[in-house]
Image 1: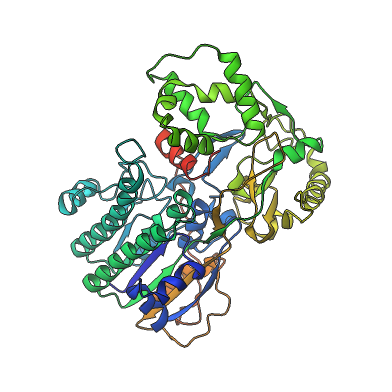
Image 2 (image 1 turned 30 degrees about the vertical axis):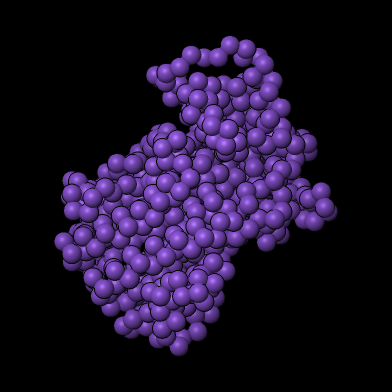
Length: 535
């Protein structure tokens, strides 16, 4: 193996350094200590579904086309998948150069491309995803035992420590599957990604021992991969960082409603919510009777929504009371919450459609299905929105946002028009955003994404004494290609880091974009809700 890329979701120095100091991560520590390492600036927005495609294509979201966990077609939405990534990935560059790749658990890679090698998709794929080559997942399961994309959902049988043990088991699955495939395909390039280094903070906020346990399990697998594959060069990278949120949850749509920008309705589905999918499941064959007393439930739900009772928060309370399974089977939550105010996309001038997009979309005539903002007033209205959001302050009087800018400040390329029009970056990433309407402020999730992750390079051809400067997420792909002797594409937004020698960038034939394939996977949507990405 010439190059091994290890992806650690949400890894950052505030998390890694204490573990290094305690001797918990000997293999990762040696890579960071013996090679060139630095803090890696992520993109805006620094969220998994968009940031990993940026890392493995070397381009910003406006060029590769994935901006969030969700894709929008007018006011309709679906969960993103690999058909939404519209630029070459590292393994496709390698394939075109005649090299073999093994890719395990990379996010947004289902359905996988036809390359020389193997791809087992990761996050946002179905639990039994299409893999390449066909049938390889069965071979993996036969060779290493059970292999799953996700941890088992929490039930009475998988609660508490038993569920967390499953997180550790996933780390083993990733490592053993990668080693099996590397032995079988003998790839020049390998990429293995570990996702629970992120999820542990969402699912067990503040539990440092569980964080330690996850990272130790991952480090053990990395050590075994290094022993088995003996790569010439190793690159470790994360998509963003992780840290505590001690600010506020800011409900952008409520703020814009009070300013006369957002219109609401009780008739539509409003902003994307797991509730919509859950009710579709009930309608399409879920069992259990519909409860009586619906008007009372609707009034209760409307009041709850005003105070930010999302599915994720409500589910946590129900689980503590032992009622989550019953409610999941019998209560039509989506229909109940539809009775409360939700954003009316078609009637609003602008709105936040998904919190992790970190921005506001204008509803423009000729671009959006029922646009109300005349095209010739686009810039004026956008400046109005920028000014409004820039003025937003917390109840303590501090600015909610450190930066409110036109999307062009961070996003450009052939697909930029699909993005939000205004980007709003929370101050120090202390505050979270919400698409709810009701009370303007709430309490944020305790731990969430931060702007800076990590990168480290070690091994053959790496100048361990090189100053990496201020490396960016977009620099990872050209750096990896350089270690493979492949020229980066001139359309990439990053460049190879100074620790390696790189060929001059060159132009490649235009990437052939296939037809979009719908995801429509309720199980994946529910997992997004568990992590707080769907409200």
